Each structure stands twice: as structure tokens, then as C-alpha cells.
Image (cartoon, rainbow, N blue to C red; front, side, top):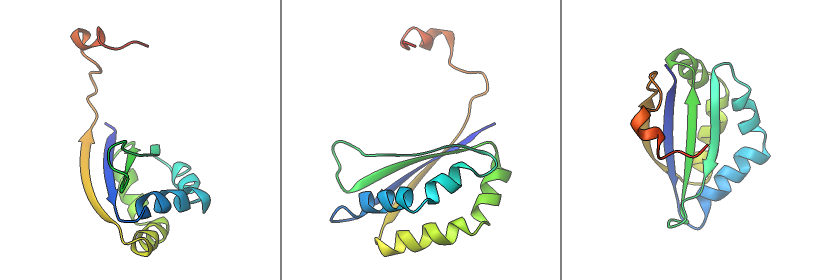
Length: 110
């Protein structure tokens, strides 16, 4: 059962994007992706909101998230969030192990 957390980082003056860029440039993103249990860690930029960055962060299970939260990586992330004065909105999803229903597959082009 994978867990996906969507984190919307919001700031002013482009700070959310600067935060994401520094996360990548500093190697923090690379290190998080290498952590045991990490499935996905990617930033996206909403077209209609230049002051928000969406992080899609997926993990194998809750234990993997707990280990990540207890790691020194979290202090680095927290320091950068504070540096750029970001606020967050969080959505959490648990994977549906049954997959995409047959009726919905008609709308998916692979």
C-alpha cells in the first residue's frame, strides 16, 4: 500500500520555485530519492499560480515515511522552507491496490 503526499508550497516573490530549485541544486532531492522506500519525489509548477509549487512525494509505506521524517534530511528541508518563508497545504492519499477500473481505462491512452 503506497502512500502519496501532495504538498503545496506557497510563498511570495517566486520563493516557492526558488525553494524547489535549491532543493534540487543542493542534492537534497537526489538524497531523498535514494532513501529506502521512496517511490517518487517530483516538483510541479501550476500554470495559473506562480507562487505555488506542488511536490508529489510517494513512499512504499508509513514506516518509510517515519524513517524519512526522523532523518537528518528533514532538518535541511525545514531550514530551506524557513529560508523562503513558505506555507504548506498537504493532501495524503493511499494507493488503491486494485488498479484502474476497467471502465476508466477507456479514458487512458498508454
